Image 1 (tube, helix red, strand yellow):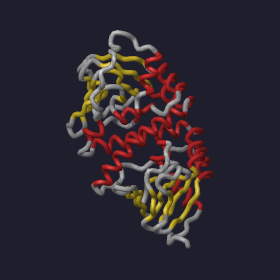
Image 2 (cartoon, rainbow, N blue to C red; image 1 turned 90 degrees about the vertical axis):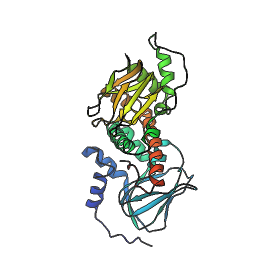
Image 3 (tube, rainbow, N blue to C red; image 1 turned 45 degrees about the vertical axis):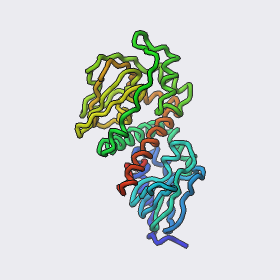
Image 4 (cartoon, rainbow, N blue to C red; image 1 turned 90 degrees about the horizontal axis):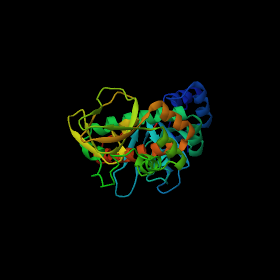
Length: 316
């Protein structure tokens, strides 16, 4: 049976992809994407994929509504626009929810392997998507009443102080490998990242980044504590070994938070151009950071679903 969705022409399919998944692509890259994307129409009540099934396809919603369901959890509702299956894809796991259409829907369908190859072949697109998603996620996070829980880190464990010595390269690599943002990266990718980063030591009270400024470096907190001041005036403490300003470190839009050292801090800082070079050479770094964003996306989606709000952001 065919879904009750009016037919569209090839030009409309291209437009749908151009303003959705292809938003950050050049014309040549868009041609690549058009070559792997298919339009599908699906009736209400159909299952796009089941929980615990491997991720084989990804979807961009053009029209219609669907829900992503899991036992004992509030459903994620997606209406009119958005993407489906990307959180699991970026985390490299089987589907955590079952996707069921609640109205007739029109979708753009992508083979997951083809899309991964597209991202790897076009690392600059991957970087732009990563930056866009990071900006969307921090914007959503700081606007929520749960912002302190989402953005704060657990109390930092007591570890051997490295304040008196320059951090050896091997120890840099080990520190990065234990951070959620880099947990999925290869040893070679981490080594390249560790080698490219500059070690920076700052006294307590130093403003690392001010709200409204444009990010030029990615700061990784190695030792000490920083405080994020949110637009609401709420202050959140981050400590231990983590991205200093959470996902905002990966965004390229004007900062929403002010980051201040609350004690002497040691940072590893990476210029954005150097980060892009590392992406070109080590795609596993890109996928590791996507996985980090996907975990944060999942947290925000669950918070939104529990209160009947729209999802935090869609994946483009």
